[in-house]
Length: 613
Image 1 (tube, rainbow, N blue to C red):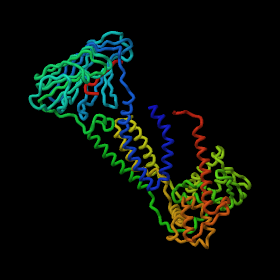
Image 2: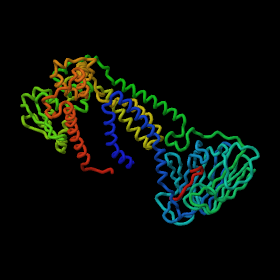
Image 3: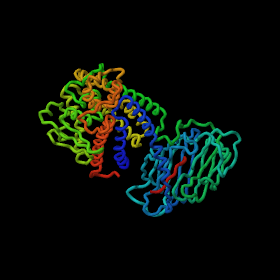
Image 4: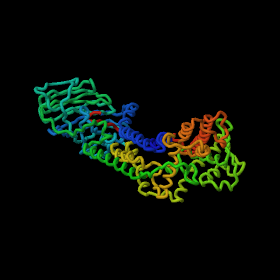
């Protein structure tokens, strides 16, 4: 768990950065792309335990127990016609000092048929003829049942101890299997219809000096065979009878004794699943539950999508307007259209202040800029509040005051706070002016999506049951991912919809090709220049310049309030990019400085086996 927390702490900043770079703001096209990406991630997350087990298996090697030994392994098996195995195992184990006892594990998977599940039930455990303390648990993500024999609060004295374990296993008769074992006896007079294929001595980390197993069968045995490991020697007897015995001496550590018996008895109904035991951590062991999860996932996806659709506001008409709404700056207009100020609000507002002769922008070189105040408080009072507050935060509302934007940490902190404040100021302005109103249902939906993502991640990490149970919350989050978009959680009022229509109509003027919406640039060159900050805020500065170029056949004019132009209009565009890059560099350096501050650095086959503890 601690490892997962550290991994999440290390990865989440990177994931968040990638998310904002690729999918923000969450437009319709980006939303569908994000839904596709999240669908793939949900599938990979559901398969995480399988990949994890494969990686772990490559790094984990078995540990030998050279200090312990099974001196005698004696077992009686009875196999019923329905495939149920009833077993009594008696083990004499020599233990060194410091051990509590032994443990026995029973894998649910079958060694020969991975689609069969053998469910274990331990009925009795004794030590030296007396009832033993036993702790039962599931391990390996529910694929192995463990009986931990002994008292965890005390250790045994060195010596030999006799353990008797009685248990049952289901579905031990399987369909006949191809191949042969090293030691065989008898033959099949007719084609076998069922096979008993079992590790009568499982995987133990210590040597087994002597093993003897007797098996009572539901019918006469045909071909019988045994194997001591893959190619070792063993003795098998009882072909043609319903009593088979197998024995072996000096079994090495992790060396099973395998018995195979072909039978001419009806193959009983088995506990089989379409998937192999490897995927039990993903799908569990119930086909009806898999179907239920699939239905729940589809319903959750549909519910999330419908909730997201209900959060969408029907757009009013957007008739083209030839001027921005009266008294509103670029950040206001961008917020009215998208309920977000966008990526360029800071740059656009600075250009707007320069166009209004409230500040002067001066490039020192390609990477350093100076913003200088030009106006007295009376003139600043005439500007919209968001633009005025930006000037105050940058400290340029007095004549001669300046801000040197060079990427340094102090200036970067100032610029970062100013950029964040633009969004906050616009939201506050919209609430105070009655442009938006809270929408409780949308806010609940947003928290529901976030909660669903958290639940899905927890389940996909394998912390709660089969990972398929993470699909319904993941599907809900995918279907409702649009609830995380900007503007969700508030609704535009009637007044807000009127402002929205005007701002979006003005944006159409700036972004629509000239052939569709003509603008008399020859008579309104001053308006082309005045609208540049708005075009930057809307993210359509190139389209606005192209529209001028297409309509007039000339390059766009140069703003006098933007002095660093040298080689004409194209250099103006390049220097504008330079200014934006300089501000962005300051913001990045601020983020790096704060993130690097003080704080914590996160920097088997059927039959099973056992061991000592």
